[in-house]
Image (spheres, rainbow, N blue to C red):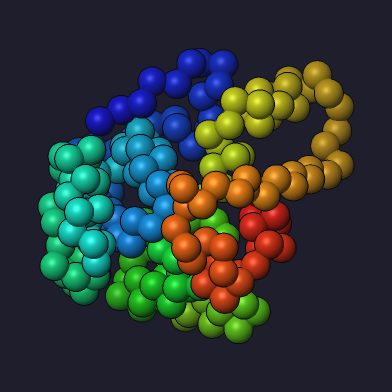
Length: 203
């Protein structure tokens, strides 16, 4: 599956890498946020291949597999992590669970690609940094506003062309709208979501 992106707005992340089919295989898990779809599309457009999907809710997993036909339904996260062909785990779990999932992935020899915010506590940050250093695996974060937003991509191009001078700082502050009909209950609770500062700072 591919996503057509106008040339003007094609970010670096979407540029295909020199990969042959099956050379870079990844799995997806914990589909709590719809960003997992953009994350998966971006990886596929870069040349990666999705092999597995897992979510405790089989309805979510089945919908993902229909959208990305290459993904097989896994019975649990371990099935993905034990697959030696898988090089990266992409996940969009409940925010305060993301660090522990990433640590498990890195300890299993996989890189980790998580939705933002990537964690909620300084203890999680310390543990993730330690495990990344121990394993040599990467803990990547999907900041969709930076790579899938037309305004941000156009600004990046203008910067590269020297049209707007030297970049000193970028500040983006945009908490989510209050949309309880679209967002799960945990999204509005401080402990699982991390609180409003986590949301603002991850945008």
